[in-house]
Image 1 (spheres, helix red, strand yellow):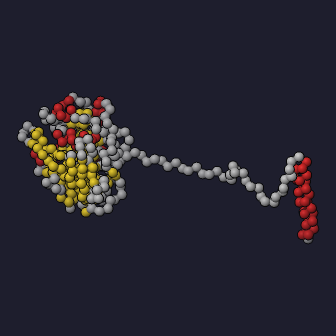
Image 2 (cartoon, rainbow, N blue to C red):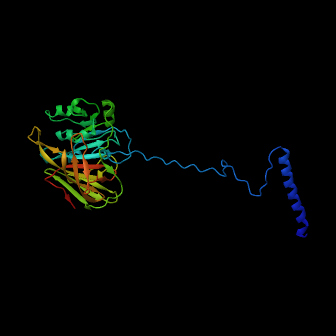
Image 3 (cartoon, rainbow, N blue to C red):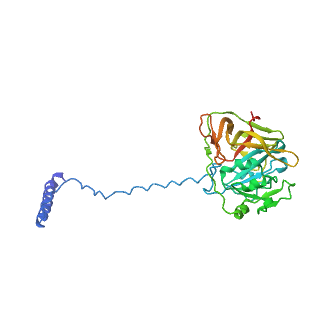
Amino acid sequence: MPAGIYAVPMRRTVALVGLGLMLTACGSGGTPVAVSSDPPTPSPTATTSASPTPLAVPEPPPTSPLSGREAEADAQVMVVKMDNTLYAQPHENLVAADIVYVEPVEWGLTRLAAVYSSRIPKVVGPVRSARISDIEVFAPYGDIAFVYSGAQTRLQPRLTAADWTPVSEDLGSPGFHRDYARPAPWNLMAEPRVILDAVGPVDTVQDMGLEFDPVRQPGGTKAKVVTAQWPHAAVQFRWRAKQGSYDVWMNGRQARDTAAPGVQRATSVIVQYVKEVDSGYGDKFGGVTPKSITIGSGKGLLLRDGRAHRITWERDSAADATTYLDADGEPIVLDPGQVWILLKDRTRKVSVQ
């Protein structure tokens, strides 16, 4: 059918509709409404689709300021003195400590002081006696639980008067037992959870000024094997790239643990060169107890990622934490994980290979 047949009727229909709208507006008593051919403007409140709600980004879990590992923000702190001779092997749950200090004692030997906070094991050990240097070293940690097996008679009053909560078998403290599968005196074990329940509230973990970042830090020199020697003791760190950490060797043997992974490993090591002096204390056999002077300043090394970095350290008073600085005077950056700190006589440097 020809298209022109419908042209006139359609124009007539549109005109009639328009006239009807105008008459309706006038009949209602209102102002005539102009008819527009433009599409209506949508209301400002009208939306064609709802804006998507942004997804909430979960906050990262808190990490320990002592190791950079995941931990509770208000975790309590416990320090346990340990033996590190061959008779002490394998340790029990030393791998759970955030920081492990190596301290010189009589006869050219060393002892360990393990700091626990992010992880509190059921049993740790073997536990050994305290020394005068412990008071100064751990003063910045506050009123912590300080666990040891005893001390020289003249030193005991100073240990109990220090600003911490002393926990010792000699003091009748709960939370100790003997592991008779081990030879005495290297068989005294501590039960940290029992101890913390018994002693009541102790200070929670504090910021000690340590910074952590898993990103490899620039600079440094190759450090595949680092050995620290004392007259009758040695601690060695062997880099294992696959694990991203150093295997710890003590006195010529790989250091082991009853807990997984079964060997001792350190992600970061700080060698802190200090001045050693005669503390005025000693054992009953004539051995002189050295005291490590940790207030002041000195030099050191940072080991991480298989490389050694020259550093310095500063500490103004016993209440202050030690600040470790890189060559540019900025705080050093540690790899998250267990940190080892060696208090090393400044006259006997470590070897780096």
